[in-house]
Amino acid sequence: MFKKFLGDYEFIWGPVKKGVCESSYYHFLTSSEELHELDITLGYKTRNAIKIAKEKNNLYEQILVIERIAGMHAFSASLSYCLAVEDYFDLTDKIPEYIKLIRMFFAELERLRNHVENLSEISGSTYLEVPSSLYAYYAEKIKQISSEVNFSRYLMGINTVGGIRLNNLNYHIDRIDGAINTHTNADINTNHDININIAADLDTNANINSNFNTANTNKHNEDILKGFEYIIKEISLYIDNIEKIIKQNSETKSHIDRLKTTGKINLKIAEKFHAEGIVAKSVGINKDLRLKYPYLSYKDIKLESASYNDGDALSRYLIRIAETRQSFNIIKICFKKLAKNFHDNIFNSIENSYSSLNSSSDLNLKEQNKNEIDDNDKQFFNENFKNKNNFYELNAAAHRNNKYGFGFSESSEGPIFCIVGGFNGKVFKKLNIKYPFDNNYKIFSYFTKNTMMMDFNINETSYNFSVAACDK
Picture 1 (spheres, rainbow, N blue to C red):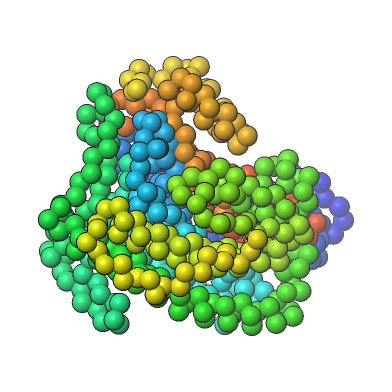
Picture 2: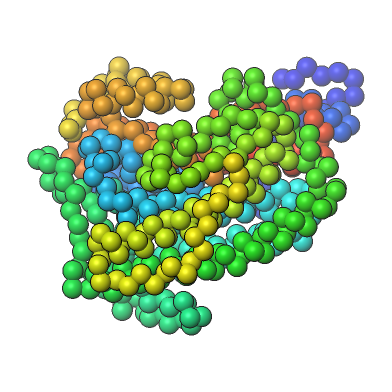
């Protein structure tokens, strides 16, 4: 119960809300326009996803569950899981470069889409309905491209242990010259897969198998590059239009004034609650894992993290703009590196016909353990997972005792960590995944107090936390 004074009143919003709002219970204490207290209760849509994943029959089924915890971050989550499993089986250094580049390509595509979608939400919160609708339109177009090329709007079904699955890639799309030739699904031969997996006999040796159809390798991978080039060419058109929206919004004084100083957080509390991602960067905490602990091939890219020190909604808005540009440039770099990798190291007969792509790299802003889980081990596994600072210590411990695998990826909202253990020959019986929202929603609750009720929607959209990721 809140301590109330004369003129204060309480009201509740949720957990059932209109539209597509997620199930969260907001308990407000306010007087007139000032919001004095806010309690957030989650857990209304808990699905026990981790428990369900442990009951699956193979590793790929576990990936499918992980991807569906929070659809907006499906690729980043499944990537974290795959990196953890590869760490467990000591496969990290054996993954081919082109697999890393393809993973980076889709990871940045997901980041770009999420940032554009949130720019729509932030613009809507300041009642700029036309820019909001335009941002939403381009976010939807990116989803449609993902579905068109890979049959998944949210990039599901791509990541697998040891590599990627491109059997869903629509090889029969040809838009390089502006034409569409889409064949039926029956025309897609499953031998088109690029599917690198751990060998089935994990009890004897964790190998990597390359499952190529050598007779058609050149043609298939030329089509893969065409698919990626199509994505880039389409998105480049959207980016040009998005830049126009950004410019118009920056010249709209009411928009900037509403964001400036709203939802302001300070460095001390952000550090206390272990702020992640955009929220952390808005107060100058640069914890981008792509920079601090480079994975995949991020170490080979000149990457600078955008950050500000004001800690307000405007800072978070500007960071998203910078990271939208950044992700698009990384996608282009990945494509060029991928084309060169295919040409130089794998498919020597492919003509490198993609040199015309914009090559700008300016980023705009600076073994198995088959025993049952004993109680003490289970407690260690879960308790350490509560504290983000223990993740790196856990990783070191995993290498010491070969008992756990550890992986992470930087999503659009911050790091997603995954830890696995207790492999029984089919699946991991010890599994946990942590999203940045577990920390950020607490910061949102803390710093929304003593703000104006009319700014609540701005605060909520600028934090952009996922209830689904918390209620896993």
